[in-house]
Length: 163
Length: 151
Image (cartoon, rainbow over the protein chains, first blue to last red):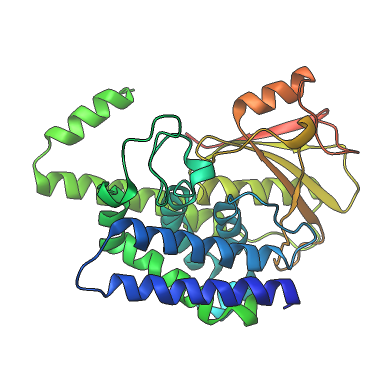
């Protein structure tokens, strides 16, 4: 793990802790939970990508690429204690639709659609994230969403052994 | 073949239990494709074309966003180059009209090639073919072969 990876990893862990704290609050606001989930996963992805020949660029779009790469990784398979590559791949297959949705929560990728930070549409903002009913929140509460959160948590815990 | 709207209307009208069964079976079938793609072992010392076919099958199986993969044949002997056309990823226009590739950092048993990938939309690929957008320095879109999702 190089210094750039370590820096992104530490920030990802910090964002992830805050995401978990927000999930456990009695009063929950979807936009803040989703914002920190998006931040934590983006930085986890970038922590991995800084270890490759082509470091990530400024764009937020890195999570989907990251999951696709992890699907074929032996080290990730072993670190996550999957018995076969296909087992890890099925988890990634289940995670990718959520990853696509999370990627679009970042304002620069959301276009004029819902994002977790700023009111939209940009030219004439009328909807605040705090007032919006994000379907993603229901996804995170179902079996697939819980599996996604478990996968990200396990990837964070074992980062140094596979990145 | 039903249109997407017809499928949607059919699913929306199903009783809850039947809906759950249909969704579960469809999802299981998709998962099975992933399992089959990843369970297939790459023969030792596979040539580059065989390795590319094997990797493309896995990418198409695992990622519902990839519509097709263009395998660019003009590449160094130890490198596989893919353009992956994606219908779900928000992909901004490349800086200076030229795409960058990413190193896939492959970590796969018995694979002797690196994998370089460019994600782009279908429209962007068409613009590459027309010469409006460019591939990275040293890349060429011809000749190529294409891998598509199995029906």
